Amino acid sequence: MTAAVTATRPVRATRRPGYWTRYRHALWLLTTRDLKVRYTTSALGYLWSIIDPLMMAGIYWFVFTLIIPHGRAGQEPYVLFLLSALLPWTWFSGNISDATRAFRSEAKLIRSVKIPRSIWILRQIASKGIEFLISLPVIAFFALVTLKAPVLEALLYLPLALVLQIVLTVGLNLIIAPASVFLRDLERVVKLVTRVLFYGAPVIYSFKLGNPVLHFLYGLDPVVGFLELYRACFFPAVLDWVYVLESAIVSLILLAIGTVVFRRSVPRVLKEI
Image (cartoon, rainbow, N blue to C red):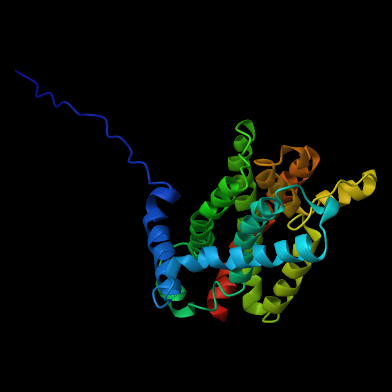
């Protein structure tokens, strides 16, 4: 009598695709859609992402070079010193401003499309980030004109600056976006705060604080750390690693708070919008 032997192969459990694997295509579609909507009807299109910060830089260069000598405010060439912080600041402030309208601008679509609501936050950061990358040739142009080459070793600061800025921006957006649904005045408050931060951060100037207490308190502004990293690619002497460390700690704390706030508030946000 022969026994029938059936060979069974072990069944491998299929791994569920990760977050980015499942939703990166949706993120890319929404990001490109943002850019198309913003620039399709414009005559100059993507050139506006260069013209706007360039005009701002021109105004500040004129004021602090020809009218009010910048003196200790920055290093030469001042236009490059200015642009190396002004362009990333434009990306940051634009994202914070957009966060106040992230849910209210497309409420019906957000309710109907079944993707993580954080995608609506991340696509704004990504679209502004692409604009930032498009504007980088402006810095390269002025580096050539002024014959100021970046310090090769200091170029390693660039990816660190990008990471710090993205962590901080995501954390703040995760807090501001849901809060603005319930607090309609938050949009105006954010505009006022970013205006104050612009003059409080080392965008148009850079200085060293001798007082240890003031030095520590100033570094608690997380914008200071990543702006100095960007600028240090051309002007390594301005970099203060204490500011970078403080920026990293504050940014990570805000990201953790933002993640908790966003997860808990999304159900209420969907009912409100």
